Every structure is written in C-alpha cells, then in structure tokens.
Image (cartoon, rainbow, N blue to C red; front, side, top):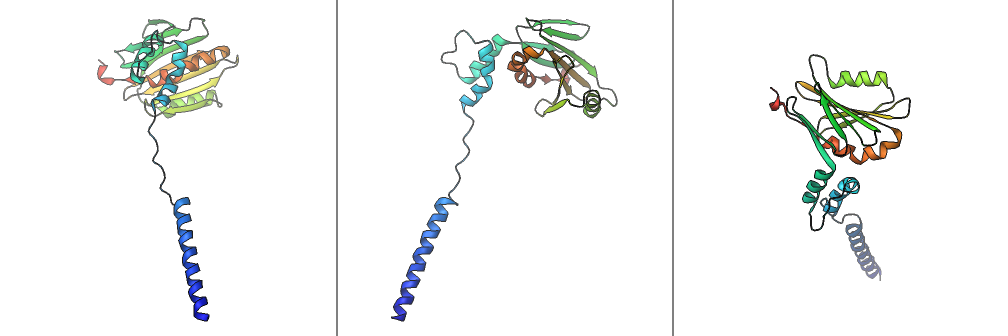
Length: 209
C-alpha cells in the first residue's frame, strides 16, 4: 500500500509539472510577434494635413509616392538659394519675395510671416551659443532638435500672444536661419505645413562658390 501511494504521488507530481510547463510556455514564453512594418495607411496619415489643405484634382489609383508628389506639387513651393546651398519648401499660397540675400514670405491673410537668411558661421557661432542667447532672452522657449536635417527649433510666445518659431540649420561654414511669426488665430494653419516644411530642408555646401 505504501509503494502504491508513492507511485501515485510521483505520477501526480509528474502530471502537475507537465501542466505547469505547458502553462508557462503558452502564457509567458510564447514567442513575441514580430513588429509589423509601417503601412501605407500610416504614411498617408502624415500626409493628410496637406491633402486637406490642397487636395489634387484626381487622386484615384495613386500610391503613396505618387500622392505625395501630386499634393506637394499643389500645396508647396520651393525656396532654393544655390549661392548658399539651402532649400526648403513652403506653402505655395504664400506671397514670396527676395531682396539683398534675405527671403520673405507672407500668408494670404497676412497672419503668418516667414523670413529666411543665411550667415557665415565664423568663429564661435555654434548651436550652443545660439541656444544660450535664445534662452537668455526667452527662458520659457521650447527647443526641439531634428537630427535628420540638423535643424534646431525654438518656439516662444510673444507678449501679444503670437507665436515665434526660429529654425537654425548648421553646416561647416554656414548658419541658415528661418524665422516664422504667426498670429495666435493662425497657428492651426501654420501647423498644417510646419513639420513638412522642416523635414524638406536640405543643405548642399558643394553649391557654394
């Protein structure tokens, strides 16, 4: 009888161990699913603000690449300064002008003003120096870095409630500065384009004479 009890106990322990292993494998140690690649729908969501602002006449049958090309062709213009090796896209509806090496653009309603200038870096004109100067003038300024384009962005609210955005792009020899002043009531319109504008920035020092 004693041997029978020992045999039964061992069988019960073996069964419990098998059930426990099964639960652990199916619950805790089940291989994780691989991350799914970014879908075209996710890329489309990034483009959606521009589609809402300036939809192409015929979008039927277009893939994401074709749609991007079509909508930017309608919604965006391009500023290119080959002398300084700097380019950036901006809303095509803005009135654009250039004088004395400084470019300006104004929205149709006059609520958004943009200025673009390029300066030789010289000695000591670094990202750290500009950051210190901005923070001394506006301690509450918000700073954002864009590693892909090398852009540093400062957002600050002015006394009249308007938003001032300064973008600085550094190359070996130049500092490119984009300043955007936006009335409070026009911020939604600006943010439709802003991230796209920033990511469109390119610099090319081989263009420099």
